[in-house]
Length: 87
Image (cartoon, rainbow, N blue to C red):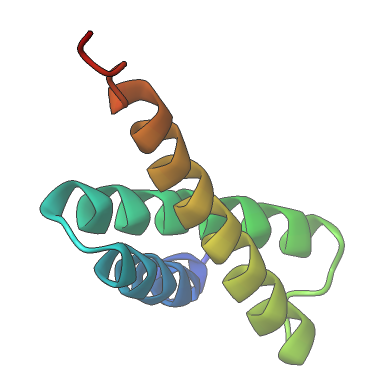
């Protein structure tokens, strides 16, 4: 991990937090932030290996995978906690 690892994850934290806030609820906020962080870490790893970690491609990749990670984490949580109707 270089000097740019943690600053590169900030877009993921911000995107995940905003996505979680848009869904409302503390669990969605936390899971959206964690999912965004994981997504941006995966994007960082992929972009460094592809030597695209400078400029607009890195920011766009980070934001896209952070949003995908936040969506995946909150979607999985919703599916796992959905209870069948009483009847």
